[in-house]
Length: 283
Ligand SMILES: C[S@@+](CC[C@H](N)C(=O)[O-])C[C@H]1O[C@@H](n2cnc3c(N)ncnc32)[C@H](O)[C@@H]1O
Image (tube, rainbow, N blue to C red; front, side, top):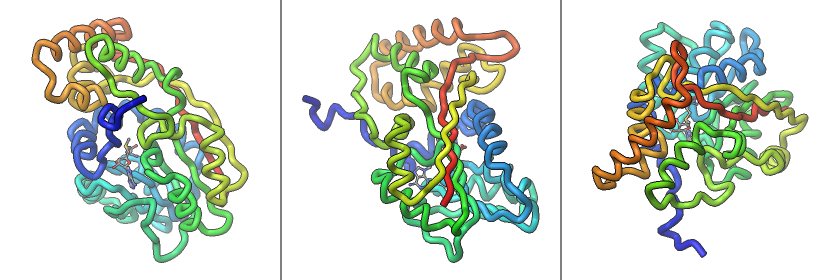
């Protein structure tokens, strides 16, 4: 039986994880840009829509939504990392976007003054400690007839971009197990579980579409060495290697380099497969 200390600790987005995301923000966003585009196309916003971007990070998708809903619409990006809402606010000011606002809050409890038309989230909804309560709360933030559109990672076995990296780490060190449904990237990988959460929260008319695509690790055009730097500074590999002896780090980095070289495509970058669920439901 696992001892509590052996379980990987939940991701601290208000602190360390938010800082990691901020440090690698351009590469992270470039890696998941195609998923954002697919989710925005599904959401098909109309002029005037009032939208919440849950776990908006640095606000890349919020700013895209702001442009789609036009000046008569608006978007509120909510994030539990103050560093990231500050970054998003700065970007909106730089872009002269007036209909986007960013709020540092926990989306599981943030209560808007008036109900919204739509909720959106690209990979920002898998971290709630109590997802049943969080999604019931989010349902209550929508007007009747409103809609939610989410992107969440599919099962780890279908996400070699993450699993092959973890496989490299496991060859060299003990990697703590992650219990299924633990808040984290794969918390909502099981469609039956996700469906139960949304239906329990009051959502209806669920539609779940698989999305499979190549993720550019470290951003488009990254070399295998760039992808190693990105993975050890920004991804879970970095967390696991914190405090590891230098020789061990070097062995891991050498193996990651070999892994990424196998997936490297000239002119494209280090391209590894990712599987995502695009989920829509009505309030
Ligand atoms: C993987 S990042 C995705 C960021 C952004 N949606 C994007 O696609 O660029 C997950 C984001 O969810 C945020 N987050 C995690 N738990 C949250 C919560 N309870 N309330 C609000 N934001 C949360 C994190 O701070 C982080 O910015």
